[in-house]
Length: 313
Image (cartoon, rainbow, N blue to C red; front, side, top):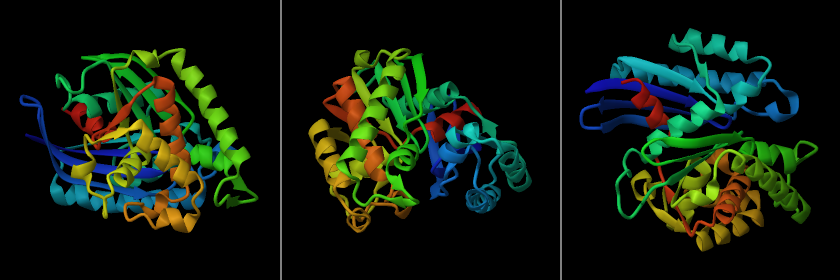
């Protein structure tokens, strides 16, 4: 077994996995898996820069993660940064802060690299299962972007497009600094049009309709799944590999889009940092399922973090 630490820093959240890995058996044993909403991508779509307060929230989380990594004695660490830090003019400030705290330089990866990590992290366990046949379409709905990866034993095609839950919320649901609560019909129409255009771009590279099994990753998907399952608390084990029908995704999305902030926050599985962006995230998921023609989505709690971890061995 090799003990490794993987950090995934996205537009909305920063996540840590410390795990023991056995390359011979393919076993991955979690020692610590955690997430903090830091909203690193706050305002990036509008300003092109990482906000000072967003950087400080992210660095505060990094300090906590550094203590966990030290306490558990991870032998190797890899820090991967995704959409927001790719887009920002001042990403050097982000890099310097991470190096000072964790001693490693964040790798600002491309959308295609992000997609490949997500694919291998999500499909390693289900490969060969008769009830989840390949080809798989892995969809990772992040804060700033969504990755599409089609493959079977290997990745066949991948594309990243800018339709994350934070980006869609800030682009279409914010008026004079305030998030619409709930969104107006014309705002929802604008989001749908933006998503449809992005899906057209994704299909230029990834033949979405060839997928047999749709696998959904990240917080928007797992939150929708938790609501669909009627959980009274967030239960990762119950959510992992759950299968949520299209009809339920549509019903939950429509309900979230007409809900107020207080009503969304009242869901016992809703992370406080996701309340404002979950409606847009759910709409991205629904739009993808409708475009692909998927009758259900298989929800995975294993994703880019697991792919990063495996890359270390």
